[in-house]
Image (cartoon, rainbow, N blue to C red; front, side, top):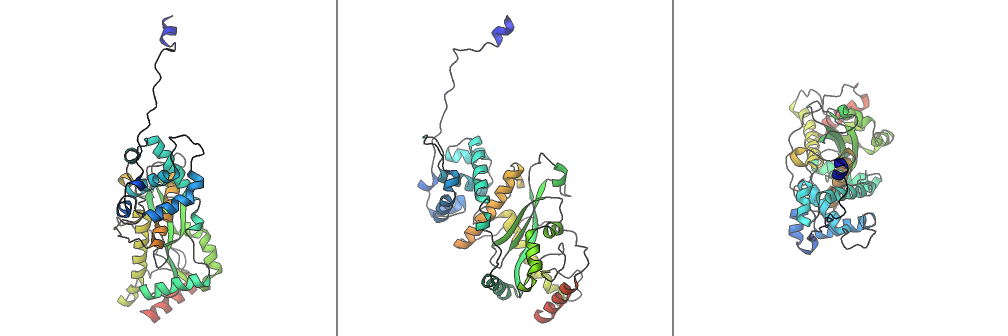
Length: 343
């Protein structure tokens, strides 16, 4: 009898009333200067993203407390830009932490799905010529169509295949491959490989390698010593014996460093930071991938708009082990000719 009384529902209990917080819409409060400072993007760019994502994000209900697409975009941008805990982001706009979590996931998924519209490798002769001219005039590297590099982005422990994501420094990570052009725009992005994966393996299994192998006459990429030397992918000399030959390494190092900055630290005055609280992307794996792709898209949008970038030096990552593939003869000849002609 006592047991039945203890667990008998209290029909007279007062139902807890739902509390809706007052919401602040940043577009109604901040000017362009403050929007860039807080969201890394000006009003024009934010409204453009809202327009792109409205069909995916706009609530299908007319309830007065549904979150409009514009506020969802701004909430996600604030999360990307600051790396704050979701509760902190929610407090700024009057939304709960669970709502923030759903918004970040939904917005990132919607934006990442449009990656092909924003991250494009130069395929036309006109596009390729512009990139090659840029590398030649700015970096003294002729016939170059891009720089490839990989970077580790720390994530929380995955629920499946956990051991595959453990990097040798004993943290969980994704190994992200990116290619950038002379203007530091991302032209290719691969976000799916566990942290234990070698850069060369990611390259050998990406779609871009097939294109470069079949179109090596268009020019070449630059990579570091983790990549195999090929006619379409030049890497540094392993043991340069003269100061002149050392010069070939420097442009590759500098471009690789800048590419890592854009992939890991995003834009200090631009659009987004990928590294989150404590250097860890504290999201489930699927959402983490969407966030990384989304911030790559936002980076390119800001570059197109000419928003100034104040690069932050990321913590220098340990170089990959040198690739031990047999040196490609055509690649060696091309690299030696480049050294003789330019240095």
